[in-house]
Length: 200
Image 1 (cartoon, rainbow, N blue to C red):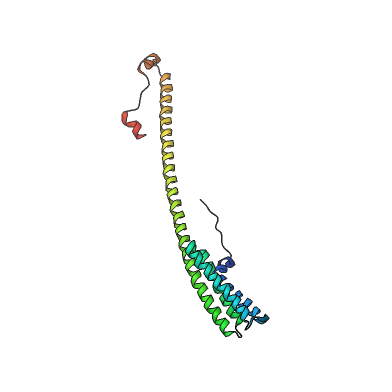
Image 2: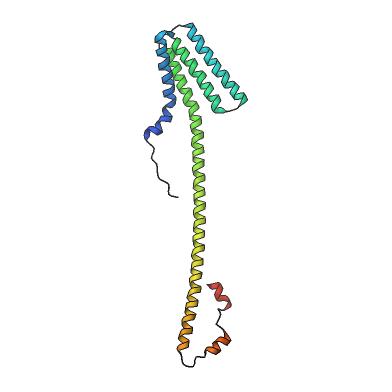
């Protein structure tokens, strides 16, 4: 019932939010390193990146039509976009076009990620509500069972107190003069009135 409270580190909270920007910045940095090492205006490198990008997009289309797995399709199209972005950033001679593509890619990545974050937050809130409802229901059942057990204990105590009082009365009566135990055996022990058992 009592769960430990776990405070997440601020890096653990910020890392998923920074992931799209880190990914696009990493692709830009690697593409510019590739540019400086001979990819600038290299038609062969541009054709290679274009072919890889088209291949990843085709894989995304095939995966979407055959499996319908949104994560697989999203991954394939993200890879296609990253390869196209890296190809253009590596081929271009200057920073304006790569920076423009970086800003567009980062904006698009955050737009897609925000959708998944909303879905995840919605599922988390629904899960927390479900857990809270279950805890409240179990707490109610525990309270009812506690009341029932307490009532049974009190009824048993009352019955025990009655038997103890009756035994004490018999002992006291036996000490009185003129007590006839034979007459008591013939009549039997006294019983509770009909409503007294329900009152207990």
